[in-house]
Image (spheres, protein in one colour):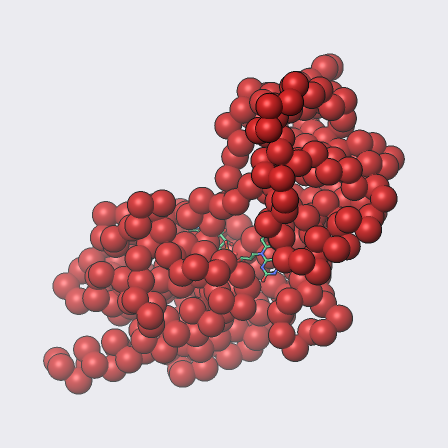
Length: 312
Ligand SMILES: Cc1cc2nc3c(=O)[nH]c(=O)nc-3n(C[C@H](O)[C@H](O)[C@H](O)COP(=O)(O)OP(=O)(O)OC[C@H]3O[C@@H](n4cnc5c(N)ncnc54)[C@H](O)[C@@H]3O)c2cc1C
C-alpha cells in the first residue's frame, strides 16, 4: 500500500485548487478523478465570471489551466480512477480505487462535486442520448437548424439556452415560475435574443418521441392554462444539481438534501476528513467558491497533518 499525505477525491475546481495548495506546501498529493479532470465546468461553453479573465474563457480551457497549475507544483492526478471507499485506519485513512489500489493517506479531501438533476418525467430516460441532454457544449452542434428546449430558469439554463442559439433555429426556454432566476445581465441577453421563446409558468409533463428520438415535449401549466405540446428535436435539462456524496457516506454528516456538512474551514465531523465545493452545504455553487473552499480545505488538511505529527 502506498503512503501519501493528502488524497483528494475529484478533479473539479475544488479538488484541483486543493491539490495546488497541498502540493505547493510539499505534501505528497494524489488527486483521483473518475473521468477527465475539470469537473462540471468543462460541460459549459463559456465562463465569464471567473476573476482575472475579463473576456471570459471556455470551461474546458479553465479546467485545463487548473490541472496544469496543480501538476506544475507536483500534484499527481490519476484520471479515470474512481475512489470506491474511504475507511479510517487509526488516525489515517485507507483510500481504495476502482483500479483495486489502496493508498494510506494522512488526510482526505472530498471534492466529488455534483451531478445535474433529472426531471423524472416519462420519456426522459428512454430518450437520453437521443435528444435528451444535460450538456449543451457536448451536444449543441447536433441540433443545427433544429428546434430545442432548455428546461430551467437559473444562470446555467439561460447561459446554455444562449449558447444553443448558435446552432438551433429556435430555443424554447421552459421555466416553472413566471420569471427567471438567472442573474439580471444574463436575462437581458436572453430577452434580446430573437431565437429564444419563453415558456414561463410551464413544467415538462412528458418527453415524447418518434422513430427512437425526441419529437416533442408536453408542457403542463402552473397558472391554470391548458397543456401545450411543443414539437421539437432536443431537450436540454438544467434544473439544479444533486451532490455526489457516496464516497464517505458512512463517515460524514449530511444535511437534509445530502450535502456534506462542513465548518467555515472545510472540516467535516470526522477529524482529518475535509470537504470542499459543490458536494458541501456551502450556499453558492460556483467555480470561484469551489476553488476558495478547496484552498481552505487543503490549508486545514496540512495543519491537521502537522498537528498529528507533533502529537505523536
Ligand atoms: C452547465 C453548467 C454551467 C456552469 N457555468 C458556470 C459559470 O459560468 N461560472 C461558474 O462559476 N460556475 C458555473 N457552473 C458551476 C460550476 O461548474 C461548479 O460550481 C463547479 O464545477 C464545482 O466544482 P467542484 O470541484 O466542487 O465539483 P465538480 O466540478 O462537480 O467536480 C467534481 C469532480 O469529482 C469527480 N468525482 C465524483 N465522484 C468521484 C469518485 N468517487 N472518485 C473520483 N472522482 C470523482 C467528478 O467526476 C468531477 O470531475 C456551471 C455548471 C454547469 C453544470
